[in-house]
Length: 359
Image (cartoon, rainbow, N blue to C red; front, side, top):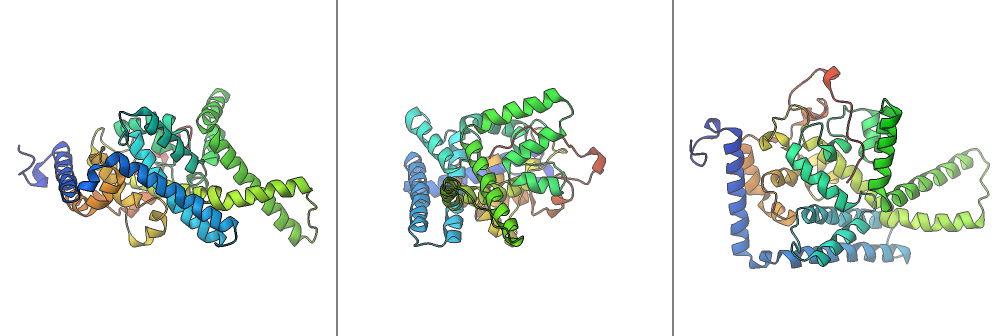
């Protein structure tokens, strides 16, 4: 059967996936012919990284000098940090400076510094490439770690926006001490050093201000030492310019990604079934801080080597052919089905996610 001329109903999943790839790649070629500057992929990647880092530093400077409100700085830096996540994802697939290891690894290091809440990107590379091989299964550690396949409840709400809390809850769930120790060791390995500092400072920030709030309500303010107040002044600034933005970005990305990927009843290798397009209007506040991930990441599963900005530009064409070939759009039932494609008895829902969260 000729997959390019047959109707979608006559095609198997492999042929429909090939049709999507053909159409999306052709649109990418057309865009590059129309806009030759898109051919300078390395320069574009480096330029976007410079823009994101300068944006984060600039808004931080404006906040610190009193020229910008804290919440404006936090929101701006969450957006800029979302750009660096997209760049890291492209770097994992070796889309920038593929044959030049020094600038390539420099970019990897810089996107990690912009997002200290995440795991080591060189470790994530192995997890993400495995994700493409086993998406939707128990062995997809990358998505399982950010709560894909987890029944919705208070535990998932805590886990989806807090990487360390996610690892801690999984450690508590482990049935043996050897398994608990394995989770602890793995978490320390993948989070060292940046994420341990990031989440540690976040908990100190929350604890300090919670203690002050409770003490104030009780009418017994705490007399902190001068050194403690000096440290907290630094942490308070960091909470606005880097920690808070990444907590917000993490929640938005993990919420969107874990719900746009299907889990459990996905046919092995069937890319059509691996994801949905999740782009309702009411999710735009979330999409804004994960760079439209729900709308465009599904495209990536079909055309792995297209940079994120090309996916944004080809989205309209891609969505049309994806819908024609049977990719789901805005399947909100996923929230009630623990990300299964079809309804399933709650007792069969998997409760053994991967050992660490990573994005």
